[in-house]
Amino acid sequence: MHRVARGNVTETVTSAACARVAARDDGDSTLVLSIASQASGVTLTVSIDLGAAPSADTYSSETVASWSALGTRETSDGGVCVYAAGNTAVPPGSFSLDLAGVGATPHGTLRLVQFVQAAPQVDCGAGDNETVELEF
Image (cartoon, helix red, strand yellow):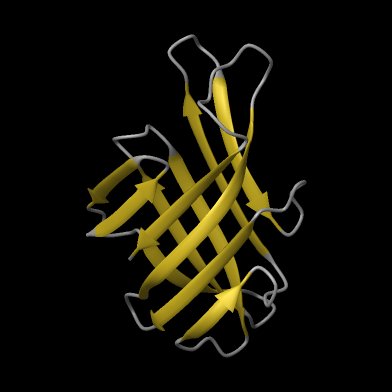
């Protein structure tokens, strides 16, 4: 069970595969989060490089080499809202992660700021960025 707060929406999402730590070929480990919000209609995927020896610690967009976050949702008028952040995104956005455990089921809290991208005339709501808070 995972608590998701996005904009003015707070919900609990139940998923057995929400968070996992995956080993990469280069020896580093990556925290991968995948959340499908029913309340906001956004599917969010986050990937954070935890380095070669991941541990319960505090991580941020200023302290990791590689990270990304991408969310999408279709609007009622057929448009698409894209919520993007990461070390290669423009603008990059930001995150802070308090990782409490990295075992078989990683857990912690993540605060993420993503920027909204959409075609002209597509209504993605007020503001040009979105703050997401996850407890997993």
